[in-house]
Image 1 (cartoon, rainbow, N blue to C red):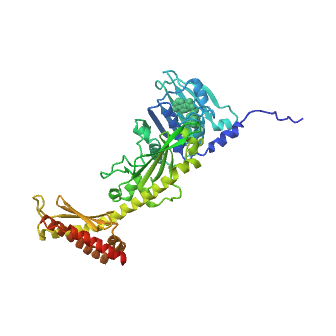
Image 2: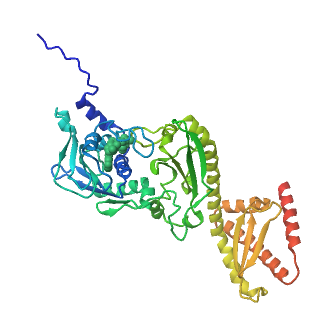
Image 3: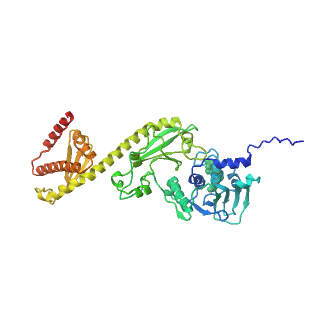
Length: 483
Ligand SMILES: Nc1ncnc2c1ncn2[C@@H]1O[C@H](COP(=O)(O)OP(=O)(O)OP(=O)(O)O)[C@@H](O)[C@H]1O
Ligand SMILES: [Mg+2]
């Protein structure tokens, strides 16, 4: 007689589950490793040491992460590798809430994971999960086994052994990419004093807003005061989403070569960075409504921060990477963020136009300065040396064609980009390539520079012709509007 299968009430078919859970969808090794760093930080660790090496038997990578946090009791340790095992299930104070991060992230990368913890200077204990052993029918090693070593007051060490999902052929490449990704994800904590190392070398904070990155004497700056949006939490209270926009200094950094631009993250680092409890969980093009990303958008940055009590609004899943915003969140943020995105795009475009303008105008300014010693001397505040020239553009009141000032022997001429003459004379010239256009442009600029110099010259001699400049600008503007 055939044996009847016994009815069982186990929820899981362990040998299949352990293989299926390996596909829990972590986007990269760094996002999986971030789960372990989250746990270390939540255990109040001040030091997180990551070691990347090779397994001696099969040469697959092995990764160890050790912290000096609170460690775990034997009972806590026996819970930590169980799916759903958590000391903070559904908590919202910090990163952890699902009781899935440690086992799911570990098995997404490694065939075997060992967790060792120690407390109160006592001996360490270890638990482990081994995919191959479990598939072959062995029980997981979830009863804590005592070890002999005492590593310090308290702490925790997680070993990922036989990492068979890592695509980097060289460990150095893996290390470099981890250094970059973790430096960016945990930037707030590193700046706040966390000592994170990979193979003994500190991981530096990488700030995509570039607010604190100083290159050639310039950094990005905040475009506006930070904005706050209050939203209802599922717990019945409210919580605030903070949004910050930064613009990069186009006028200085446009000169950098492409390799430097890429290394600094000017190119390839753009978009919106989303921080949950201070840790980056997504970066890309988020909450920008109908606006598509263009090249100019590399030159401004957006940082959005929220608290885990708003997880439902951001659509946080168990692997804590990426967001799926709720309708309410989109309605609250998107219209404003989209219009700011468009505004900053226009600002960056203007800044690049200014840079182009400046580069061309420098030639005329040099010619004017070279001619200056042959012109009638301008005596201001007892100084009478040759004058330097600077030509720029800005939005001024509509009837003014240009404005000029003399300070410290430099004549600063600002063309009004809102005056009809700018569109009629300048923009067509800027659009034409070639020597003839450049010469014509220089002639027009010299006409304006000489006019401005004459104005200053006469004014200092007590013969103001301010009024003429104004009336002329206004009349010329009207004529051009009719042309
Ligand atoms: N480095 C560590 N130091 C101390 N305790 C830890 C450490 N890592 C994990 N733990 C303990 O193990 C438990 C399980 O960790 P796990 O990451 O799986 O879940 P979680 O952090 O509670 O929730 P989540 O799935 O949201 O990360 C934690 O609740 C915590 O008690
Ligand atoms: Mg966790």
